[in-house]
Image 1 (cartoon, rainbow, N blue to C red):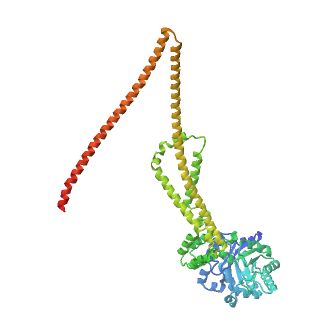
Image 2 (image 1 turned 30 degrees about the vertical axis):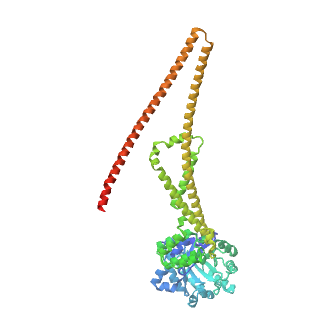
Length: 552
């Protein structure tokens, strides 16, 4: 391991920002949990309280009670001690791998106080002063911090006296839990913390009931302290200092990853998750989760109940594909509806050779996509019904953040419902639009052909009328043999033309009669063949009947 210059610890107090600290918690503020809260804006972390005499005496205690790594900085090691030299020896052992040591003067547990540790030390300010002085004098690193964590007295003057004596001995900073040693869940005495802050020139940290992000700033405003320390608030929500009101799903999965990576024992791993999920799960869910007895079971439960961190606010691969398909449909429909591209041009594009392989399987592809989209639509409907407000209302014990989780899942289900529903609808619309374009192009072509035929017929009729008019004029207005000859010539041409038309009609009629004769002959042949087959069938039946009678 490498050592770290602890100027960064005291420098944090000089920057003017509220320093955010993870409290020492027996069995909980170990390396894995410290790694987690550091990802969510925790500035300084404490180790769990370590009994200094055991730590100095036992190698096993040192190996089990103190673990760290290069990323675990800044780190403060908290010791329980009532002897100055023992505290110095323990401090020297951890100094190369930490940034400071803290003397526990606030633990109210009976075993600690009966052994002379913890909160009983606040009644012995001279001993506290002596232990602080010995550590400051005998640790080689001048930047190594020495701090104390205390509770308050009923008589606040005694607490102020303790802090002033510790400050005179060289204590770097003081953490004040704003309750007496007899108090547990009573309101924190922030006025007492403010009094202590005003009485000493060194940094003071406020501890007690820091449960939500707003508490950080409100306690700072009430007391003027340099930082805040959270314990149970961080257990319930390790992302507290990052501004999250409740434990985000991403933080839960970060804890899973860190625990698996560092080999955290299952009991510790499970207990942390119990704290994290306490605010965000209903009582029936907590009962199920608390009964799990393996890491794999816990991970399966989290996956099935909450989904992975990537599932929140993000679409899975299948829904990303459906959304892309929906956008593609919209784009194609917009292009197909462009007014300056005619139906004939689209039909020409549809008839290109590149579409030939697709055309053979088009109906199958169309039906397959319909089936897939309908299945996804029904799955989205199921998810919406599962996480609907009506279902949530059945459990009156759901906590507010559980509603947030369920509403997020409901939002995701509704989003998928809209995507799949519109995808199905636009897929049908697109098929219909393509069909209508082809029909429109065919109708346009037929209309154009009919218009050309009508124009030709009009021209022919007009020509006949003109010829008839000329003929009439020649017959009625003409005189002499010349007029008669011209009229006869026109009549002769008209008769020849009519004969040609008559001949063409006769040829077509003969061809039709020939085709009809051929069809008649084929029909007669088929009839004769049918009669023959019918006769053979009857003969076979006649032959088969005696055989059957004989067998009987």
